[in-house]
Image (cartoon, rainbow, N blue to C red):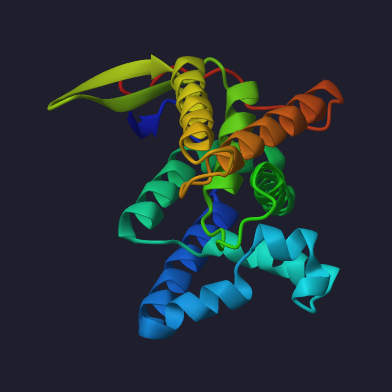
Length: 236
């Protein structure tokens, strides 16, 4: 499944959403310029679970690990990784930023990304593989969207083997299906790797989504966020 657009217009320009997208694109082009130096660069400055849990082995402090956690959210492993993440953020992020406001959206985004990285690190604490990508933070945005905009509909490309069709799915259906795919993919990757996480940080997606949904639920329940009223699909 691939989302094309949602049915809820945002009332304010998604300034932070756009800045994050631009920052990720700029960071990716910098990665391309590194060439053969990219791998040592990622090993030195991206988030590494083993280094987080055993900083003494790498002679680093807590602040360095926290910095790499944030820095890694703006790095990507290829064009498809970048484009897929940025498109999901573009589709879902504007409404979440609209509900939170610009400053709080940035804090929320970084918090979800950190929670996602921790979730993946807890699952595979001895991993030496650098974790990169905005997927975990964006999963948090999806979790908030799930809580705040259950009436929304998502115009979606659905891939059925060699066939492709287009459907309008209720946002909860789209997001629950997305979450189920992440959960079973993560579980299967653990089984296939004998208890170690695979190449895709599935549990970062799960952790980010759960963190985002929980924070969104708490903010709404406490009255700190009042999402926009219900909208009907603009393609009707």
